[in-house]
Length: 228
Length: 198
Image 1: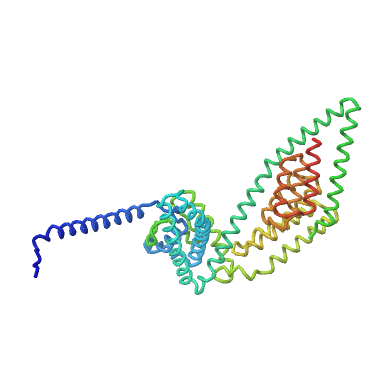
Image 2 (image 1 turned 45 degrees about the horizontal axis):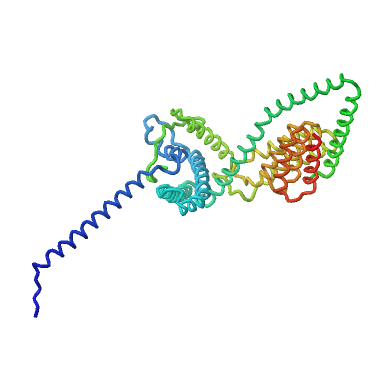
């Protein structure tokens, strides 16, 4: 029979203990550091102003109770919640359009891991935010949670479209000024040519006459078939 | 965004009579937001139901009015009274753009596209190319595909103003959107002819 020499085995056991112990310490510290780092990452979106307004309104009455200010009427709260939903829609659209690009860039290694972490966190926060808005909506008016985001979606799309239209219409003034100047210069050129010898005038004015005629004839064709 | 459990308390207060929300904080974003909020609140108050109804179905009254305004504009246009036609179209536009914001934006786009295109045509008939080109551009912005008339009109206006390069670019973009629309192709050829002549 062979007997185990326990004293001789102390060294290997101590070796194992140190190895495993250092491994555990390292891994726990490493994880903690990563978690701290991702917690300190800058948020993807700026502060949610509409959410702050809504929650501030919710908490308004108790703090000013001594001034006897009436409680905030529910209609104001509903409007504030709708504004919050509109902003959420804008953010969701931003996240959805960024997701594809972000993951492709991450696979190619063009962006760092922390940007992706920030993105994932923003996505998760948005999910919670949506759930919260639906709950608030249902609390204010029964079953509003089902339609609030439909309305918010239309509001967001409509506002974006109107800003774009306003931009286009805002060009009108500068364009008009440019055209007035341009027309004045064309006219003065034309007058100069009128004063010049008749031989050169004949040619240009003839050209212009043809031009005008063709323009007005096409315009009248349009008139007939351009209507809906 | 901050933590989901917390928020920043803003110094808000409410005017008891008008129920308008105001803030002592002078940040411009906040002031603007409150202005929008108060407008939205007022438009919510004019509703019968406590919350905006779902986008569909639409209240048909306003659509009927807009169609009527467009029809009268078209009638004036046919009689040759272009200035009056423009007035009717402008009224229709105003009505379409002041729809309550929660009504379907696709519908607004459709109506606005038609009205702008028609107003562009009326402007063109009066040879005011600048207004015509801007209205046509607005119409294209509202409806990019299936709006060949508006693409054609802006191209025509640019050509009339002598901005041949812009006109060519514009018609090229229009052709990408509309496929080979005969009118646009014709206009493109006309522009090419002028460019070579100039």
